[in-house]
Each structure stands twice: as C-alpha cells, then as structure tokens.
Length: 201
Image (cartoon, rainbow, N blue to C red):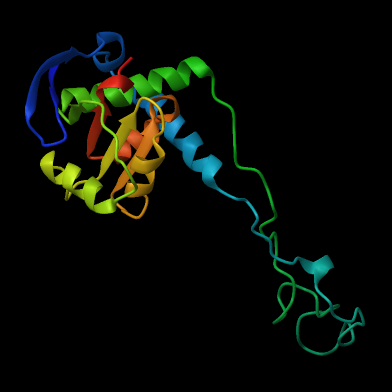
C-alpha cells in the first residue's frame, strides 16, 4: 500500500512511502486482538478494592438473643452479614488482574489492528516535524490541517518528543506515543492513525 507524505500545512509532498504488507496488509486475527486488548485493560486495573468481612468488623461477640423460643431466626453475632453494619459476604479483596500473553501473539494483534486501519484508509503519514516550545495551539493547528481536529487520533513519532507530547497532553481526543510504545488498544481506540515518516522504520 502506497501513501503520499503530507507536511504540517496539510499539503501533499513529492515523497511517497510504501507500507510493509507484513504489518499493514495481513489478514487480521480478531481473537488475538481480543486477548491483547483484554490484557491491556486488565493491566490498567489497580486491584486495591477491599471490603471488611465478618472477621474484620469491630463489634462485640456476645450472643444477641437466646437460641430458641423467640419465634425468629437464630442470631449469634452483630458481625454477621445479615445484620445492618455487619461484614460483607465474600467481599472484594486486593488482587492482581494482570496475566501473561506470548510475544508472538501480541505482535500478531498489533499487526492486525494496523491492517484494519490500513484497510479503512485511516492512516496518514506526516513528514517529520518538531515544535520549538510546547504549544497546544500549534498542535491543534496541525490536526486542523490534517482534517482530523474533531476525531480521536493517535500520533506515532519515531521517538518521543517532549514538546509535541506536552502540546497534546491537555487534549482529551488525542494521544502521542513513540513507535516503540504503540499498542493494539491505542490503535483501535483512535479513529485516525497519524504516523510520522521516521516512525515507519
């Protein structure tokens, strides 16, 4: 697949790039994508949730009423989960949600996500650029020139540029990553994928 390189003003340049068919032209594997996205979202979870159970609630352990003859159910402790203020039955406990995936599967998932973007013509290649200082307005002008201002975008740079990253940090519908940190979830979550010319290598 061949794409024209666009400059910061949104105009086509004389340069063209050919997308690697082993990355952008494979038959997408939906199950690999599912597993990779599931792992990514699981790894975002803190897992610090906690509720007190019967043994952890601070109440007296005396028996509330006699066992028989009251006409009601037997009750032995205020700590029971059936009592107001009692411990919770099988409450959540701190745990780690992360799980392992094979590297080859993650590579396949990433290539599958990129292939979907290529098939839908949602990839734009921009010539390498830099900002002199962090300016959100400059970043917005760039997105406007590329006709993606109102869409969710992922900008991939060859290596992370602090000025560009800080320019986009306050914006909710865009994300800036380096090529080495690209992941399946971010690719699929973005409506448009913007690649700097240097990131393709």
